[in-house]
Length: 397
Image 1 (cartoon, one colour):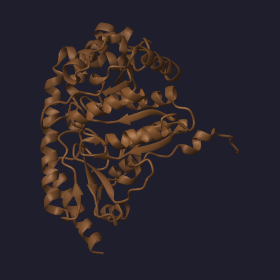
Image 2 (cartoon, one colour):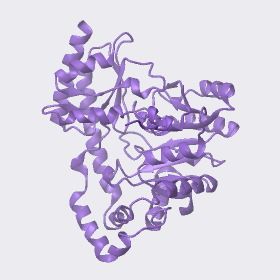
Image 3 (cartoon, helix red, strand yellow):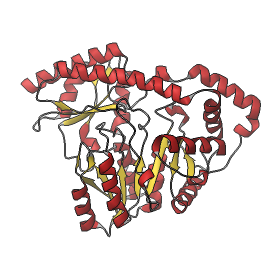
Image 4 (spheres, one colour):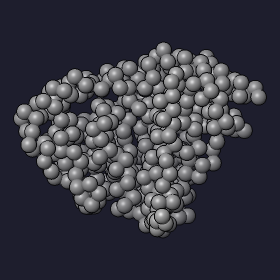
């Protein structure tokens, strides 16, 4: 049967991360591929009690339609947390609940992008953002970065050259996916000076900010925003459980109203039940205490993974030392291919995500991302040993 699909369908491809996660179904595979939180940290027993409380107290309300903006008590708690931990002073009316921060990225594309518009990214950047925005048929353009964030002189040079077409900038300043790097405070201030000068909307995606192992929290871009240009995305996926698909967007009055319209057209609202359960969890239990336990575990696993990589990887291989989050970023010598290496690694029953999908132009083939949050300690040790063995054999060839 002949189907006349929309042009955007040709742009839809399976996420490499989701495809790589399928490898975890193979018996014996040790996967560092996904960006998954540790399932043993999910508060299952607590959430059982929470669910019963919600149903006993407000079952009929929890199972009914509710406001597109989201459950007010939950939004109030989010406002308090953003002020306490991110330096963001905002109101409940400037916060809306969305179904995962991925939906927030998609809505930003729906609101701002026409075909041929330009979106600026860090290089490399989160492949899920590319997938969320590509159906709006923009042009992706990467801005060179270093260990402190986007290079400001390069950013301004690109903006000056293409300022009539640049409609959005997407960044992850805290423990970036995929590199694990964090922007310095000075870089954030310099970035916001440029943003204010050219008045370009910015998506600040912050799913990992609460997972800091070292140092002090750094002011978010949104906290430095004086013109209402930053669209802040936060999420409960990495600090509680991704299965609830509860996240939020914080933006100016004008922009948040557009997000509400987009959500009404997409799914009417996020799950009332999920929102009420997360709100009740924060009333019955200490979320900060729970997050601290997650941090302690991930800190331990990060230390172990980096220690093993120092020991097992050839000296010509570089990798980042993240101060939080879920990932480290590996660079092979320039003339080597992470995809060719992956075939050898799968033979050794260990997997990662190739780096080329994290570049808008797919022009870097010698990089890959490793996740340290999901695998228990014994499998981190064994997995890095297997990876090191495959790597040494590949480089010797």
